Length: 487
Ligand code: SAH
Image (cartoon, rainbow, N blue to C red; front, side, top):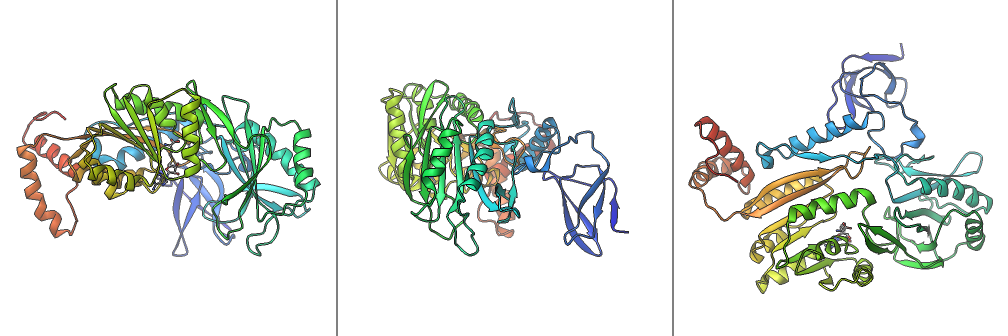
């Protein structure tokens, strides 16, 4: 027998199950809780052969259309339920008795405005493009990808033909030879602009003019083509040097009546529709007034600053990437806004400088990269005495870590909500509302003292205030207290 059957399997948030074969544990992908599956054990790594008893949440999908997706085999409603439960479990210490809501997308497909493709030669010497397989550098083919903008899919199909026709040499990362490393496409959703960036292994790009001419002839709606030169031995896609081959070298996008200029290297949220929902939600929670001085840290091309400027007295946007800061300044101008100052600096450095002179700041909005923020940044917020922090995060794990740091500084998590910015993938975006806690509670002090000992024995560096909150809740309940102190 080459197959083994596993009944009523157990699956957590990530759609994998662990199976034991000959005393070894293997992960089987793309399965759903409660299913009965057969596993092909002839393969080097055993894999799913057949779903014998299917979950009612299972849907059909085509493998080569699903690169980058993790939930393609479940209904979107079920994916939202999984994400909801996962987030509620993860943020248990901070959410109290509240339920953390997740806002779904109206259309969970074809939402990506940015696509990075990698190329390889097929056995018949045709150029095929694909995405990197998760955790590896194997290229998996991607046809009509369900996550990417529809116009991007059309361009990719046509580009494969044009690259093959012009015999463009594909870069081989093992030998570090060849020319074309990646194609990076950015498509606007609310304007007609589309940018194609061809990433090459050097300045030389034989066949360049033919490719441009064929792209123009194909009438794909491409408004600009840029060559980016990346000679480094790295998995980072873009190099520093750029050359505009066609059009203005950037695209414009419109979101909520604001116009944004986006250069190849600037960060822009990948889901345009989702971004609008996220920012409006975050600003509703920020409740900024006309007297408020606001910091937008990690501001990218200034999107949040621009959204916030309508409500605030003044906004300071700080961002490390100089290209993004230049775009942000232009974005301020083209939207006729004059109450924002953009600063090119490391966010922690900038905040520390402000904290040293005890600058007055009312609201801090932060939207850091996946690594989260820093302890020094969070400490600086304390010295600036900001009354409110809106933390937008694309990585719940680093958000959680940083929320503990806020708790140490007497900043309390008041509200958490998620926006499903990346449907069909494991990711989602979170908004945390954090406020300065000015009240000192007797019971809290007591619990703190009681638990300091316990935490010290466990060699924890600090007492997470959120844990105290949780223990307090338990204590209230144990003593029959009800809402002694409203938070
Ligand atoms: N708020 C923006 C960008 C968020 S992405 C938006 O929603 O569009 C995070 C941004 O942080 C990127 O633009 C990145 O260039 C920037 N960044 C990364 N490290 C930084 C640092 N140490 N200091 C300031 N900005 C940083």
